Image 1: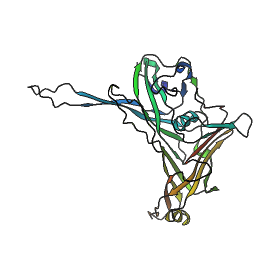
Image 2: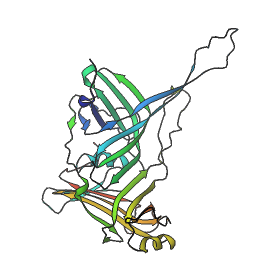
Image 3: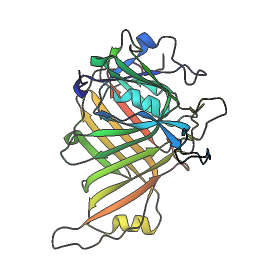
Image 4: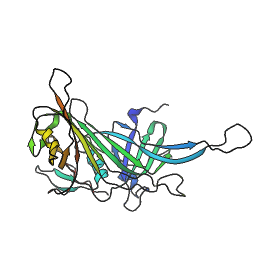
Length: 323
């Protein structure tokens, strides 16, 4: 029987703090069955042809190199399941009661340490379950605008892969999907003022993970994945209506930006309290309306949020605290 993608699963569970690369004790019941579009997480191992001379022209046995556990998972941008990925990106959020009864505000900011995950790619029709321990989110990218599906591309870096014939979960939680669509983007703000000039906004967050952590005796697997300096960048494609944004770039002005999407009791906000635009005078490519590409970099210097990025998710999920 050939496994069909429609019947596959992506399961995650948070590893216990201080036990990097190991299944949590409650993995069988703490695992989450996550909605996803694609999953390319895998283990790859290089081989090297030795230069050994044996007196004949036949090649000798190749040398096996280190093992790289990495890949990307594409997920829908939604008001519920995305909270688990944001927890893996930045750590446990600060949670308070929302304005509407039964809702909660989860505020995510970069923390000193990222939690690690065990992730399983399940092929249940053929009883193959690929399990990846010691996984951390290396990047998180979204492109908002247009009328296509709104998704996030999540880069993963991990430590180890094991192929099993049974799942790590006996009773995985089915995580509900509360999808956001591009038409649900209700506001885009520059300097806290709503503007209607952007046709596309990209947001790229890179955790600067160090994957060069192979040690003698580790059998080619990483023994840790260490956080680096967070890099936050992206671009805005906007109508060229005036010189305002060119002047922001020319003067190296610090501005803020916020993208908000909302449907019912579900709301998602990406706030960059401090950012600067790169200088890029728009080109003239034809007789129709001119657009400008505004590349940006967000940072922290001195803002009331005490952070380079603030992601606020409002939903009916009580807590994303790591169990």
